[in-house]
Image (tube, one colour):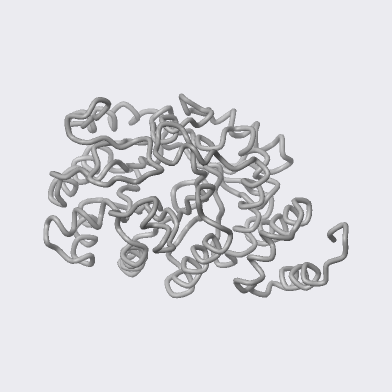
Length: 365
């Protein structure tokens, strides 16, 4: 119970204990009035109800085919234009070499995201997925944000339904959650004015769920948004999940300030990170998992997040992503061993579980 009696928080706690859904006003009240200890206790209650003492991780690596991007997001430290210093484009041969490099390293998942390249079509990415599948039939392929998909479908003049069908037939297994940023349309005009909008993002994910393609969901927080925007964002996700049950995990992504146009606003505190994880876990009652993406927040805070409702730490990564290191994340060369992940989880009194992308248990420790 909070140190100073608060009847509203008492009622919210009662609802959570009884398994009743909180409304948007309740979620906003938690952000604005609940103490960290209270949030930790309620978030852990919800987490344990869903996944017990388990904390999940997997053996994964990333491929970022290009950072060349048509968009001009003010929070982005990663994207470049064609021929701009710091731009890169991997060839298909480069990508297949990277896939082959991890073939005998027990990796179960490749995560493929990058910039929205102006010249690459659905046919290009369809061929990429097909060749990856031929090279490593057992590898789970999670690829392309809704923003990337929106562009490639429009460029190739195919419907969302048909585009997803073609990628699935080529070997696509799941879709990551990037590109959601914050759904409020007015905020999007300020931070990512030319990017795929919130409604198309949600429509692509809904179509993927209908097609039998599971997806993830994200929210970029800690920039110019307010708590009301976060709740609105999560509410839209919760409503879609009610219809489809196709989201596997929610991943709050912290805004990092280095090397981008929003940098002068700074970053939110660790306390705010933990508050956000907890409210997310409590509010998103129909999401089976909550992930702390450790390359973004660092290993220490990722460990703390396990006491605020988080039950997934992503994976080994293998130093294969530059998206957050370019924005000033603490882990400039993000990689963790299995032993490191297991030790981190055990140090919090929880049970490490190695999973596949669909959260099937592969090994317990």
